[in-house]
Length: 93
Image 1 (tube, one colour):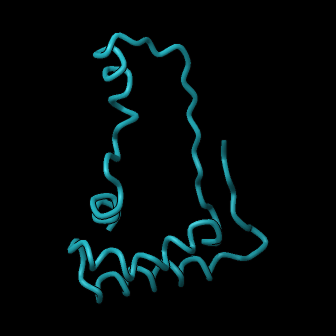
Image 2 (spheres, rainbow, N blue to C red):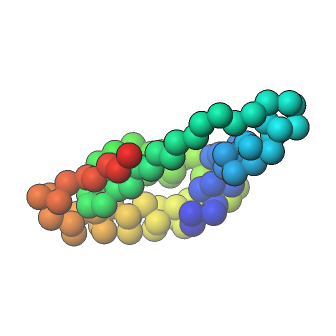
């Protein structure tokens, strides 16, 4: 389902991989770069709104049926609820 979500919702999911070459192509130089990662380990607090939107957005784009999306969303919610709330959400930068 991950690739379907990327296909449906992200215009250019790998633009940062090609950015150094894109900059060189127009005569610019990459002077500095930093990586930022948000990982949800624990309950689905941060991405819960996005998860809820998938039920509408993914079928409209044709990448999944409403039934497939509902099953995916339900499984993600259930997995989130099995995590003790004491773990919370971890953000890594």
